[in-house]
Image (cartoon, rainbow over all chains, first blue to last red; front, side):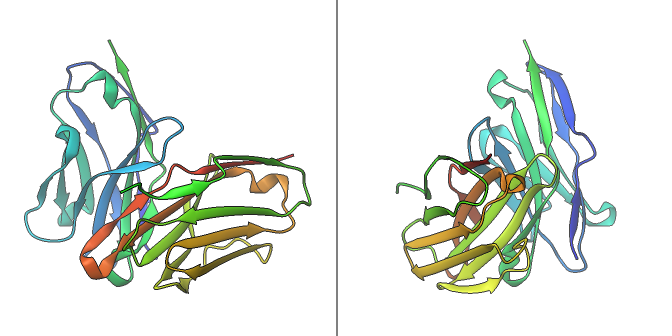
Length: 114
Length: 115
């Protein structure tokens, strides 16, 4: 069975500083990988996804993620954080047909200091 | 498009009562998913449908939970009888694998409180 670990429960970052959120997955085959963001009281919004090809993936809101098969990682980065990036971020791995069966990590809550 | 629509947005009920959550997927999407989010267990997939047929219900916690998808534009998740431990946010999501849309689009969720 697949699993996802997000080691950092909370991260506090200053506005304008860089951000990196860690994600490690366990899955026997080539994974479908996703990063979602959830603002308070809201549903989940897709930031970016990886299925194959270029291991550096660009997403919305200036985010990017790098797939590293050797490390079973899919870390999310943003060069300069804005106050509006304060939210909870979820990494997910998709299994089954076209990666439809998603398993989510526990999430990382990002706080942005002014 | 209006996105995934869920109703009600909030539900407060007493233990033992029947609860029905509703979801309207994005038009043209052929897969629908029900998730539950709690502090203790995080986000869990309960069940998903493809072309209105349940494909995987291994995440449904127990027989008190049931889900149906009578047509391509509507699904329900029912809890009968409800218990306090069912309190959670329930999300519905949809996508269209055949159309290459592997990412799932989530609704705003229904916050269920069982007292």
